[in-house]
Length: 365
Image 1 (cartoon, rainbow, N blue to C red):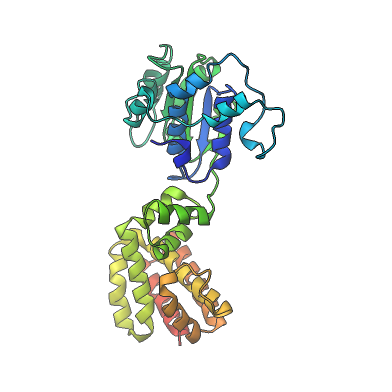
Image 2: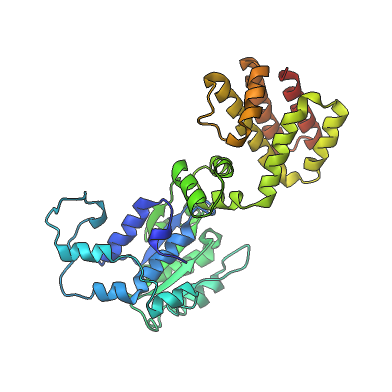
């Protein structure tokens, strides 16, 4: 758990949540919708910790009514009629990390921040009744709000959603329910209509790259591949950058391409055993191949290394670019995409990969 300042990207969502706190317009229910590892839980926990922070609540306990505008969208250097007191309140929408509530939240034992638990496959009606409906009627133990964080909320079955709906229709003033999901469309329309929906968007690649290099101490060449693979998902990029398995597959892919023109058919089949014995890694292998040969195409077109994803393999990329024609690269890229579709359709994996590697070998002179 951390504050808003520790979250990479998602500036609009952070601004919305901070405005809600600064303007005392916190909704009783939010849907945080986005891919796995995109940062939904970080946002929910930062919001919850800030709402309960004793320093933040002390700042907002003044009698002055907050201005009804989006404080965090105001250009610097202009006042727009917003008082300094309101600006001070806006600046204080970061948890202090020092008060008792923040320390409890950091230790995952803040009594008024409740994590709804469930089994791996479903959130049942009993989960909702016992952990939310049966508990929400009790006032907060020590804080202004009582906050419920429901991860993987798309796993609520219809009965569970209907049970939750009863609470959403008449929630206590102190209740805040945060539904974290990879698929908000799985909720009943009546659930969606009673929640503020915040959709997580892709984070710019350069922002993720800087995060990996500065905060996670990931080398630039490793960060580049992870960023390209993660497609705007910060959490996924970090997982890939620190995954030994991913780096092993990446090294295997590069080494295979490096020597493919010298391998016999029987040697190619032997090389493929590493993949066919670990079939869960095949989609990653294909995606890495696609990125590598797109680098080859880029270098062949520009003859400069800027913009390459496999930056540490510039020499290999230049070698392949000199030996393959534009038509050959096009054929290779098409063969990789075709292999992916065939494997997705449950065509024989070994045969599909053999044909792919032969296509690559034939087009690299």
